[in-house]
Image (cartoon, rainbow, N blue to C red; front, side, top):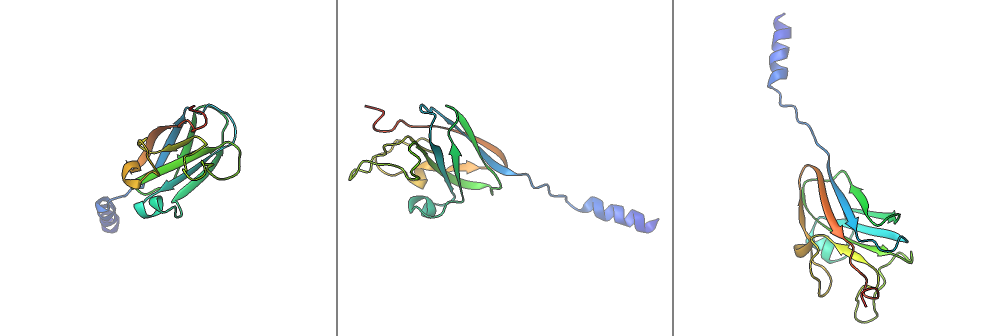
Length: 147
């Protein structure tokens, strides 16, 4: 009986840590052409984001409707930056104007910064906490579509 009591006291004194899943639910809106794929990259540092290094996670998702939700699971709380584009012609690259580098395909960046050049992690970063983090990024119009 004493052993059982001692066991209960020990078990009651142990903090049980519940590891909640950390994830991002990205809502992409403004998809005007239901074609191609969304090509997404999630970064966790300025070095990887700004230098086109390996993302923490990446996704290729077939475009099936004008609003889509893409899930990034198994994350650690911290700061992240997201970049994506709609690969309308499915050539697995963001088509750009020669020399100028202006995107010819729709794209999106976390925090929707006004861009005069490539996005930076500083402008795109957002905080991810434990649990589900819902963010919304509208797809920009490509340069050829905005004329």
